[in-house]
Structures are given as C-alpha cells and as structure tokens.
Image 1 (cartoon, one colour):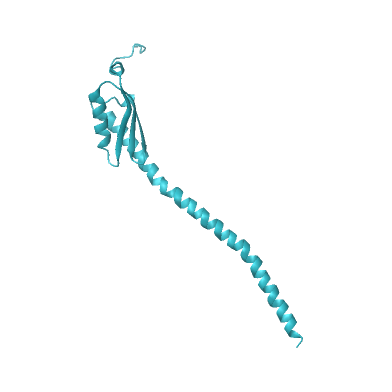
Image 2 (cartoon, one colour; image 1 turned 135 degrees about the vertical axis):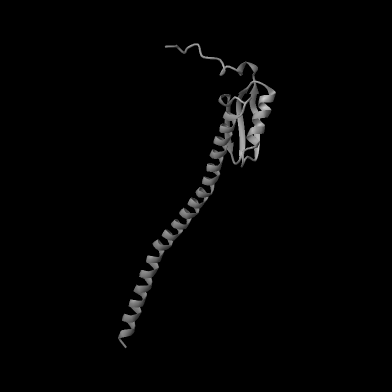
Length: 136
C-alpha cells in the first residue's frame, strides 16, 4: 500500500516535466511557422520583382533598337507590370512611338507616359559628333 504515493508522485513529476518541456517546444513551433509564413510572403514578391526587372530591361532594349525613339533620354521603371516612362522626347510622335513600343513588350499591363516631356531641343544631340573628341 505504500507504493501508491510513490507512483502518484512519479506521475505528477513526469506530467510537470512534460508540461514544462511542451512550453518551449510550442514557442519554437510557433516561431518556425511565423518565420515560414514571412518567408513565403517574401518569396511571392520575388517573381514579381524579377518580372518587373525583365520588363524594364526589355523595354529599354526595344527603345535602343527602335528608330525614332531616343533610348538615352527616356527612363523606364516597372512596378507590378505597369511601365512608367520619364524623361524627354523630341516630339509627340516620338512619345507615342515610345508608348507603343513599351506596350508591345510581353508582361506589360499598362504604360504611364505622363511624365515624359516633349522638348524639341532635346532631340538630335546624340547624332552630332562631340567637339571634345580629338583625332589622332
């Protein structure tokens, strides 16, 4: 009959040990799940950022190979597939051409050219030879 208190104390000690061990374990599991959720949300934006960078590069490349569009005077940024053109163009037709070229790039949702200014003085300065170049 003397064994019951010993067994009872052992069971209580084991239960307390398990309870105290479970607290840090549950905290670790919660920390891991919140870390995994944060990492998953970061990973969701990586493809979007890569796609935006690809679109920006592709639009700039298209400008560089399109006659009538001054690639060096137009800045291109992309956010969630929306291309924003800023800078200067020499005419309204160059601006329309730039918008058309940007819209033709795969993945472009829309083009905002409201910050693309028409300044005729800005054109053709790349076509002239630089007077600072010396001939040898």
